Image 1 (cartoon, rainbow, N blue to C red):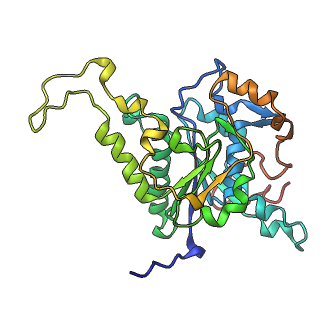
Image 2: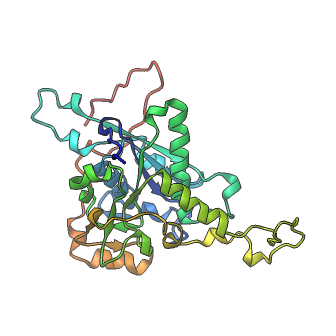
Image 3: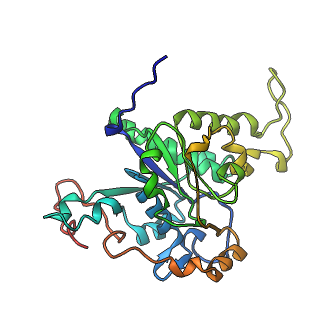
Length: 303
């Protein structure tokens, strides 16, 4: 059977940034994703830049309504593609810029405290991006999803040299110390629609519900409270186990720090790598909101 040709001119890579469901708390009034990793630079902004360097056409931040207002106030609704923004030798550089829209997705109420583990935030973000895009046009539905974790730090520009691989039919993984997301590490990776279905089946079939399973009979007995809705505790390595990984598409990172614990957070700042982490230059990532239909965008050429 001949291989199906890939239409690279119409490839939609959607970036997914999971915030809801990580269950890590430093005790502040804001989510851990807003912890600073450099002067005027937060962890979630680093994830946004990673998605931009990966070549994402849209970015979907999965966060609940209690966190969304502060994230939106800090980030806005778009970020510039760093590859196109830097074409300063062009006659009119602003004409070559490619803004990437940012959307905020809350977990559906029916899933909360039931299946809303960190893995489900990723899958729900992919599901939402698919259905919203499909309502606009079948031609803009995502072909692939790239995941960036705000609870980790590594070079944000790392995906830049692999943009063509990430926007392809095969899955892409970052690896550090022989571990990937399939080992539970917060490392960027991509997956496709077929992988989504397999991962969602793990949550649906292996997770418990409120009632004890009784085969073909109607359930009559409830599970103990601690055994109900077990999927809300499923780990990344369990849910994303079915995702196919090819060794040629696994790329090693020079360094990586996990920010999911306070110890990991202070270890990052004690490292040499933290000295080189800086906020991107002005204009690349700055607060911006899209104007309504029929309204001129007065600040589209700012920065």
